[in-house]
Amino acid sequence: MSVLLKKGLIVTSAGSYTGDVYIDGDKIKAVGIDLQYKADEVVDAAGKYILPGAIDPHTHLAMPFMGTYSQDDFKSGTIAAACGGVTSIVDFDLQQKGESLLDAIERKKGIAEGKAVIDFSFHPAILDCRPDVIDEVKKAAEEYGTPSFKVFLFYDFRLNDGEMIKLLVATKKYGGLVQVHAENFYMIQHLNEVFEEQGKLSPWYHAKAHTVIAEEEAIDRAAKMVEMTGSRIYIVHLSSEQGLQKVRMARDRGINIYAETCPQYLTLDEERYNDPDWNGAKYVMSPPLRPREGQEALWIGLRNGDLQVVATDHCPFDFHGKKDMNGKDDYKKIPNGAPGIETLLMVLHTEGVVKGRISLERMVDVLSTGTARMFGLKDKGAIAVGKDADIVVFDPKQKFMISHKKLHMNVDYNPWEGWEMTGMPYIVYSRGRRVAEWSGDQVKFVGEAGRGKFVKRMPFQGF
Image (cartoon, rainbow, N blue to C red):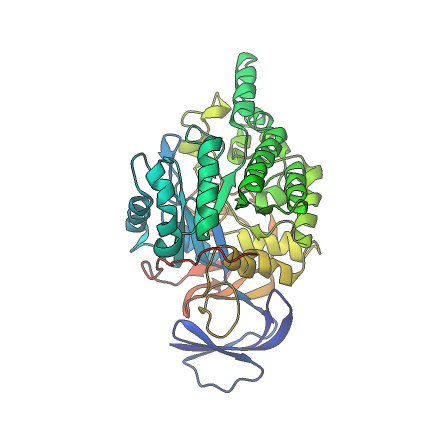
């Protein structure tokens, strides 16, 4: 199958220009002006952008959590991703007690294969940090193709500081990258106890218990361990201006620290927890939404390069039946998480590029090119010869009113319900095959379940 995209604005992280892209099979074979290849499919992309497919490196598909499972499996979740212009994901693979890293990876592959419609990889999340697991870091980075490792400083399955230091030492040797959920467990535990004693158990107090100070402290502590070991870390879902300041200060001291944020922290604020009729539960996630006045600092950090990646932390639970199954009278029992995999590109374009907060090229960098570089996806993330033909033909003028009923995520609400988007995917290609297209008033899935494949990633090369 060959495809020729004609006269679109080809967007790279370094600049943009009008040109053509020729795809043959899975790969981009030529990029230039007025290409004359014969192709099975010719697309007039005039007036549209030709973007590398977005990469979401922070998803939780079919994940067991708080007595239930996140509702998108690898079929529904990757269909939603494709319809939003996301053409690769890196999902978190939570190691179970007694498992080796390889056991965990093979188990998760079994869940994904035959269902995924786009390519995928995994971050092993180390929950059972035994000495043999530390010893396995070398194989994970160099053989398994999974060189990034998630650790939690919060939840009951958190790592202690000693385990964290050992992991940092090992990952430094073998090109691994440690990803940190940075919240201080004991600060939050204390505030949970205080609010429970006071009978303050509405969703608003989830945000108050998960205080900004807990994020600041955990980032600072993790950075100190990196400073001591000479290793590197990546802060996931950074939510606050104060947390960003800690990242910037550590980097100014020469510490190898990177960070992502998410669309929810850039666009939604803590007042959502006061929505009537318990609707604030829709936004219960960790870390929580923060005060609106901190959002501008995150946008500036994104624009200036203090934040390297935008991801989603996609982890959906139905409002009716999941969020309320145990937590109606106690915020601590509300499953933490929200949907976002399908709205990543449209929200960042509308709220970032259209509103002048970031450039089009910067959007491509934080959604595709920089993400591929950060996580060793050597064949992804750019419109360039030899790369996988993961491409979004994007209509920058197409309007779309977000409604969970017109999206493909397997969840009964959307955090941006009723928001008008400017700019939507027109055609989405995954390794040269059309997987989604604009159809009337929404994006339609036209791909094939099971075509997505597991991608081995390269050890960390520096950023």
